[in-house]
Image (cartoon, rainbow, N blue to C red; front, side, top):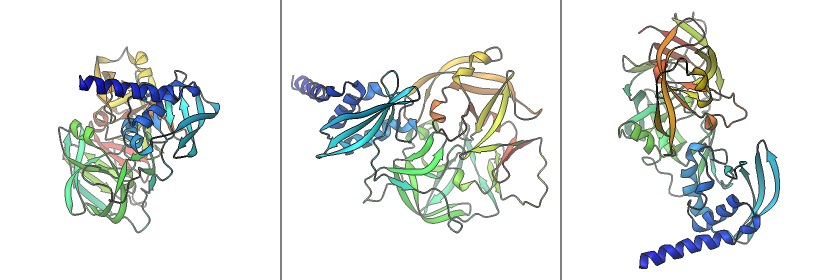
Amino acid sequence: MQKLVFFFLLHCGLAQAALAQQATGVAALDQLVAALNGKSLVPVQPYLTPETRVGSLPAAYTTQVLAQLLPQYGPVEGLRIVRQEPAGPNTRYVCLLARKGTEKEIAMVLTPAGQFAELNLLPARARKIATTFGPNELTTPPQVEAPARVRNGLLLVEAEVDGRRGTFLLDTGAPALVLNKREFPAPATETALAATNSTGVNGQLAGLSYHIAQRFDWQGIKFENKEVPTLDLTSLEQKLGGTTLLGLIGYNLLNQYALTLDYRAGKVLLRQPDPAADPPTALLRVPFTLSGHLPVVTLSAGGQTFRVGVDCGAQANLLDQQYEAGLAHVLRRASTAQLSGADATARTVTTARLPEVRLAGPLVFRKQATVFATMASLNQNPNREALQGLVGYPLLSQYRPTIDYVNKELYFNAW
C-alpha cells in the first residue's frame, strides 16, 4: 500500500506541475516545464520524435542529452511565450523561462502535430571542443600500414591513448576522433555539457563530455595534449558483439591521406598522394565532392540515380524510404527488420537486396544489401548537400577501394 501511495503522490505531483503551466496553451511547452521540475523525461516523452534535436546536436542523441540536461536545468518557476513565428512547415516559439528569479530567452520549434522538432536548451556554458588540428599539432607520416580486422562489416584497428592500447572503429562517417565516454571520463572540474564545432552527417557531432588526451598514437599518426570529444558508445559495442571500444577514428585523422580499405588482407593503407606522380591504375575512378567531411558520389540503381555518402562505418547500404516503392520491381529478398540507432529507439525498416548498382562507370556492384529508412536525421544541416543514401560495407568490400581525400577521388581495384 505504501508503494501505491507513493506512486499516486508522484503522479499527482507531476500532474499539478503540468496544470500550473497551462497558461501557455501549448501542451508540449507545458509538459517541458513539468519535465524540468520533475527532472524526468516522462512528461515530455510523448512530444519527442526520432527527428527531435536538442540545439544543433544530432537527433540520435536527444534522449541521452535530455537525460543529462534536465536534472541540471530545473527547477523553473514558469514559462511564457513572447512570440511565435513560422519555421518552414513548423512553428518557432520564442519564450522566457523563469529560473532562480531571472528569465532566460529560449526558442522551441514544434511540428504541425505539436511535437518538438527542436529544443534549444543547451546552456551557454556548453564547452566547444575544436576538432581541427593546427599545422604543428598532428604528426602525419607520409605512409602508414595499419592492421585491421573486420567485425560485422566494420573495420577495427588498434591505437593508443595515454599509454592504453585498445580497439577503435575506423569510421569515414565520423567527422572526428571520438573517445568512449565510459573509458575516458571528463576532468573532475568539468560539469557542463561539451559540444564540438565539427559538423557531421547528422549536423554537429555531439560530445556529451570531453577528455584531455595527453598522447594519442595510431601507427605514427599522433598528437599530444588535446581535448577530444567523448560519447557513450555502448550501443555500438553491442553491435560489435560486446567488443570494448576506446573510440572512433574519423575524418580529422584521415583527411591528409588516400585511404585504402583492404578488407581481405586485414589492413588499411594511408598514403599522402604525390602531386607530381601519375594517378594509380584502377578499375574505376569516381570523383567525389565533400559534404562536410563525407565523400558524396552518384549511384544508379533500377533506372534511378541517387546522391549518396561513402561511409565505411555503415554495415549496409542505405536509401531513403521514399525510394522503396520506385525500386520495388528490382528488389530481391525484401523483408522487415528492427533498426536501433544510437538512441536505442527501435524502428521498423525494409531490408532488401539490389541485384546490381553502378557508380560513374561500367563497373557493376552486385547483390547489394540495402536498408530503406528515413534520411531526415542525416539531412538536418541546411548548409550541406541533401543526401539520398549512404554506401557502406556491401559496396566497399566488393572491390579494393581507396578514398583519396586530397584529390577527392574514390577508386577501386581488383582484389
